[in-house]
Amino acid sequence: MLKQVRRIVTQNDENGKSEVMTDGIAKHVITVLTELWVTEAGPHDHKTPVDMATKSVGVLPPKGGTVFRFFQIAPDSLNDHLTWDERQKEAREWFTAMNGADIQPDTSRHEGMHTTDTTDYIMLLSGEITLVLDKEERDLKPFDVVVQRGTNHAWVNRGTEDALLMAVLVDSSGR
Image 1 (cartoon, rainbow, N blue to C red):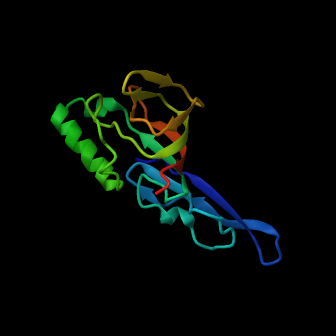
Image 2: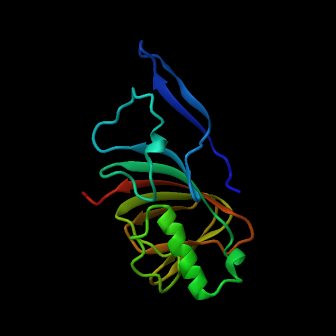
């Protein structure tokens, strides 16, 4: 079950005084992604009463924008019973559910490999996770940070508990 994340969003009232707009559990979830906030390209509208997290429709942020999210990766051992083909199929379905069917150019190293045209700032909050790249791997411990710069990668949890991560994805495509 996905860990619930309390999210507090602030705003200024009509007199310019700061206040809380929202305080509660973030509810916009796309598979393992709990969307916390999205910004569009250009100046940010700090007056809108819209919950911008609901603007997220999948893995990628809006053109010229950002997405701030919490995500959770279950232990890889939960899929030990699956064949390679079954794991590949499951990964394709998972990425398709996140509107990311086209971001898996080379999954030969791991079925979860994917590439996005974004700069990502990712921090492991708890658990264990391994960053798998085409040529090498790096094990992360809580509070380790990865700056992901548009490279093919996968997140693999070889531990025994869910890995909890926070990420900010910044569109770098110029699309």
